[in-house]
Length: 565
View 1 (spheres, rainbow, N blue to C red):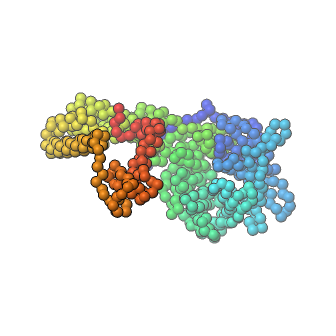
View 2: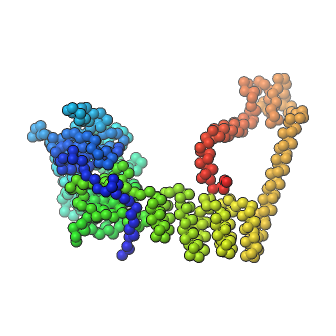
View 3: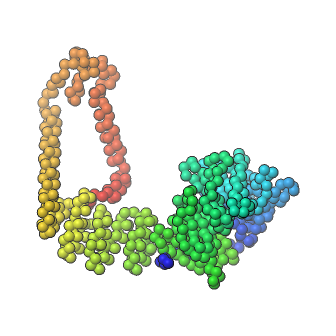
């Protein structure tokens, strides 16, 4: 079985473990993150807002009883909560959805602020019977439109779509059935997939994975798999794929069914996705411990691994991964900078891993070239000249050519040096000194064909130089004639109407002539050459505009493949 390499590309922040503030007194039922804050809902109906570093900001009573689910919106500073309130009548359910505007607060007591509750919706109605809520998900469409999916333990999903704050909404229901037993089962996880105008919803139960196409009414359900997963082991990645954790492996699903899987054994208590990394809290049944692993699937390595207590919630905020434990302790894990990760790999001579890492994380070309240079130096020191040169060739345009040339001149590796110089010329970065050196290499290698080829190229370049010099001389002579000699306009007929010219006539330097009446009010440009003249003016305006944007110019010079020194 393939053994994944382990590295410490992440580190614990705030000097190790933190504690949820004492102001959060109730048992934590749900958490959400966004807009630089953590929202914590408790069994006593309170919601607490935490700032960076788990510092208590403020709290308020959102429901009279437990807060079951909540979600902090990203586009607007709204908090949606699902919780239990006092039952007004036997016909009305105590469970409701509330919308709080966190930008609008009013004092509660001497100093404690409470956000405005701008809407209260009853989730269950006569058309939508009450059941236990098992999952909750909100999709922010074009503001103020929201699409809320509420998963139930009877296999139904209640959807609310529209401007929730103004109660301009529509409701509809989706249903997942167990094909084998013809019974309904609990919704354990959901994930929205938005591709252009296509809205789709993944729905997971312990025994199935389904995909609903929400563009049609009623929505069309497609069964992707006959095996599902438990709660907390469902997530979406940034490629809009559904991720499911099962004891034997982690599976990825696309719209057409199950995709790749990764064999990580152990019960997946939590699954998440963070900046291209797969997050897993895995329980070891043998010793009862829990391990939190961060997987880099692209490079097949474990970027961080730590033994943790019983995790109750996992979320991402402040550019970090946050784990909240059952005992209200918390761990904040952040990614190390690229330089630290590369230094770690260089010390272990893992240059191929380093190259894959910088490429997968879309580092700039200069950073990638620096890694390739170090890998080339490492191979050169081991006298693996062919492989070293293969790396140096990839650095062309970023690494000074003399650095490579001197190395291979000292080693008398003429064949490798020739290869490098050829690539240098192919990319248009070869100077005349490089050309001379390349010809000398061909001479030493007695490569007659390439010498003749280069000789022909040089002759062709000389012909082009002569041609351009001749054209330049002709143009200069024409300019001098215009400055010193009288100009005769030979046309006797108007270019526009073709009748004989009479006074008043207008002559242009392009040798076109017109009656003044044919030109109308536009006497400043030739009707025949106007289009070409406007193109020249547009080019001139663009050049003048670009000349004012010096930062853009210097960035283009810096990133150019040409060797500007």
